[in-house]
Image (cartoon, rainbow, N blue to C red; front, top):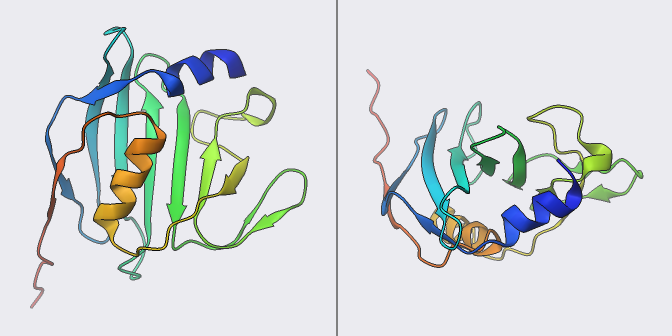
Length: 150
């Protein structure tokens, strides 16, 4: 996929297929579908991932082109510092953006920019990410209570 093709997909106005999202518990992930408004053949998978962490504020949000499986954007919150291919280091939340030049696999997005988020709320971060992806409506977000383990 070229950078221009990725930009078309990212800039397309989109709507949610499911209007209610459950924020996954720590250690889990959830997937939801998003579709293009002006071009219904544009379909995307939105992933909320909280795998492998005990940090309640750590979350990764990913949007993937459903037709190609290519990740277009990924927002990392509460993760380790990120080093871009040019050597610059980003501390704090950062947004990975598809760049043809740096795209090695369908899950690796090595290029990122700072993403200004002042609210640690997983719900607010989810909405900020959906706005960045040009989704024009936002889901009702349900936070699941933590499982009690005996």
